[in-house]
Image 1 (spheres, rainbow, N blue to C red):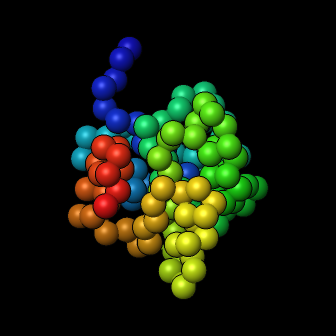
Image 2 (image 1 turned 135 degrees about the horizontal axis):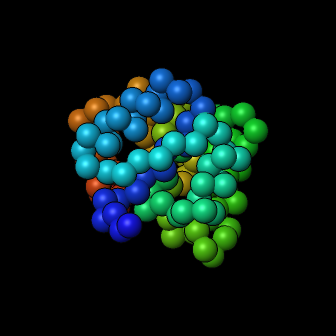
Length: 128
């Protein structure tokens, strides 16, 4: 069965945040999957690579920084855009996420108007 909707993988350990993001993106026409931590996220990426990953950076088992570095080092997955979606909004946090290989950075709580638009921009290869 072929599904032409863009596939977004949300990797987030806090279920209420994950469900908010998943429901919002589903409402806007995306096909959405959820992984509760970096280890589960890695397994999901290897089974069915998504079109884009929204990733929390602070998670148990494997954090977003380690998973991003792992995926960006692998030729099979390095082209998948990864957007850090994190509650960390301190000076240097965005730079740390970008240095790990993230293609973009957004803070939580999510802006429900901005997130679907930002996802579309990243899918089109235009993060600005």
